[in-house]
Length: 277
Image 1 (cartoon, one colour):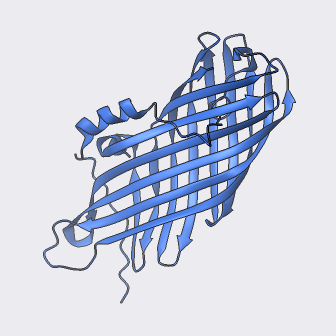
Image 2 (tube, rainbow, N blue to C red):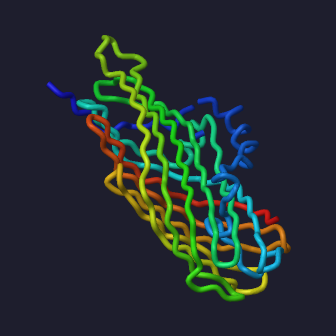
């Protein structure tokens, strides 16, 4: 008879434990970014106002943008007959974060741009199953989004772009029973990799010579039933080369392949910086 498990009660006791050394690794790894063949975009993903462009308008500009995302996550995971729901706020994720790397790179020429956004998190958490059975939930998530964009509107104050690309997902989820009195065969592990097509819009606008607002809305599907990604941010231009930004990002994924189900929403504040060349 299939066993249906209720929601996991994730403990906040000690993406990314190994928190002590892992957290230092997180801070050191924030500069790791993925490039799409050396052509990538942070000015549009973590956008910077046109006034911040240091290079001539007629030439190429390149941007590197490491960032820190502090999300909470909730959703459902199914391993065939074993099904569970989960919910972790940022304090729990931070305590159980083994490693993380996040960043964007971009290349822009006039109205055209190409960019790459990379997100990698490896985290684990203590969990409780029914009847007092202890377990550990582990998740390793890789997300890579290469895309190309075109500015429908481009002025000295900002731009409005349309984009199209792909989003690669790789999820390794495991559920390991740690203190069951009997071997119940509840341990589960599944790795899934898939690619979705995505389209969207992104925009930026300079409120002053130093302050700007930016954001994007991306959605898609294909291998998954659906995925979406929303970002809104306020930024400050330190000088022609450096800018800082703060905002909020939320994304969701609904994926099912045979016995494996991964349905998750990740959302929380985001902090980042941009370096232009």
